[in-house]
Image (tube, rainbow, N blue to C red; front, side, top):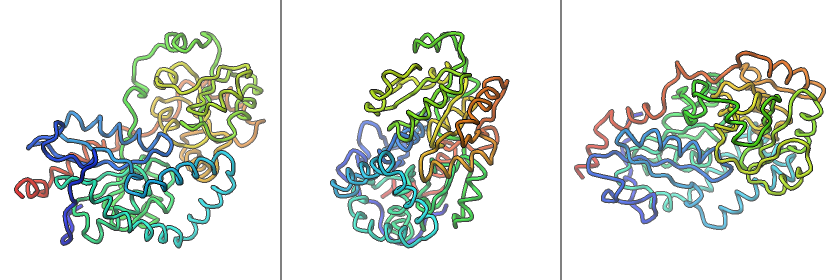
Length: 392
């Protein structure tokens, strides 16, 4: 990840992400990185926040930027709400789009070309003393990668891939390094043309760790859950997307566990389940405690919550996965032996019975992987790039 010659340095801007060196969070001897995320769901922003928390004690100033602020304002709402609508109302359309872009690079190249108009706005949001840019959303790669390749951005670009499956939209010319959370994902990224792919520990809070001290009885009391029953936590991301109501009914019908449904911010879903004979929750702030309260997790996307359950060593079932990346993630997770992919309601009862009786379950490998915060500290301190910026 050596600096590329030519081009101009990022310009300081007037947005919060473009604060100058004299801002209260900076200082003459502190290194500055920019993390570019996106407020689509919660996983991308959560990964960015966790990275910032890990770097806070390492003398690194972390600025976070919503990718969509570099686009014309109407596009932000259009993309976010359009994506939500596809997932909730027209899942077939998202599945078709996911498959088409997976097989043909034409649309990805077209999207990348369309983003060129956003280069000036992005440059204005990058401080001149930024030593590194980290992305947690694939769209950001399609803008920042070409900027890096042409020299408009002269500092390395690292991408943290939040999915287990690497869709082509993650891969962009100019991105220096891709950080993934599983060796199967690493092989996929390499097959799609990424040259430097590192396996890192997932950007999940240590509170989810299987080694964290926990008392299930106390955790259940925290949420008013029964003390003696076997509990299955049903999750569907912050948006509560997918066929969650049917999943809840199928899990209840299995007869071996009591469902606990986390509806996220989906108020309609919670209202729809108001008479459901299980336990229905809205947005949960203390997810680590809730996960310590249950015996198994049933998920449908392979996203942030799935990674959290695996980090905690919880048996995890993928059932009725959402279209597109949900189904793709489900396949990879099952092949890796990390989750149990249940494809029919008839398979739920034996799977849940077996998993809730297991003494141990698969977890994401953490011991041999690299800590991403350490990798970033190494990159920004390794050369004279930042020293050159300080002397300018």
